[in-house]
Length: 300
Image 1 (cartoon, rainbow, N blue to C red):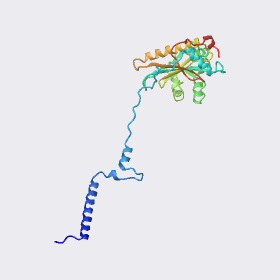
Image 2 (cartoon, helix red, strand yellow):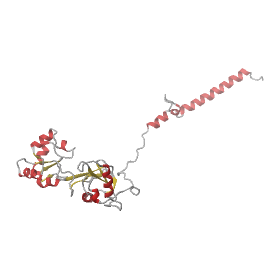
Image 3 (cartoon, rainbow, N blue to C red):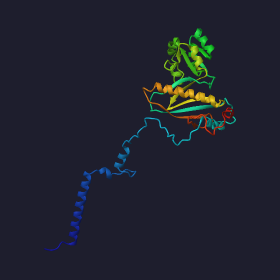
Image 4 (cartoon, one colour):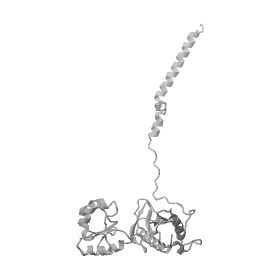
């Protein structure tokens, strides 16, 4: 038997290679072909599928973030006043105000603290009060004597609808509630926080007494876990400012106590600032060993 020629051996080798290649391609057809398919970007189908998968959502906090105060620099009230006055040099005593921010430890979407109080030393006495009541009644007369700047029913309704809201607070006598609701003032006064409501004590029976309580009074409302209030004028003495802060903190504790059966709230930090000064975290002391005499802080 003669040996195969060189040409025959080459042909046989070519056939074996072709068979192996066909077998390999057949196996690929039955496997996951997406890993070998490329887009114009150069990424495979698998890469695009991974990209299109919804990302895992980050865990959202259920409470407002508060910082640890162990290493924070805190000041006595007199020291904070001294530094704030340095930022307010040259300002008129009535042009700038002290602001107090009370940060609470509380969960989000919980019932909020909201109330009104009368400080021992009034901060803003130029508040404009509107009273909705029959214009020729004894209630209207009592409201005007108490200091209301706008009194009436239809005249008030027409002015509000025309966009002339020339007041900062609004209360309504209980006999005028039906007329006020029929006038549809809620969509205008509601977003501004001026709509009278029995829930917030602005629908009353004695408008005269309510107006007297509002003149020189202040309102506060919790927003994002913080209560803010203009706590004094720049010309206040440290003792006057201290009295206002004590009154405000006392009212906050009462409000928190009323919500204790629904949500747990605690005071985390109290920060004093002013119109043109940064905030200074208070440590609860009236003065420190290095504080200047209070009489020196009573003037700018």
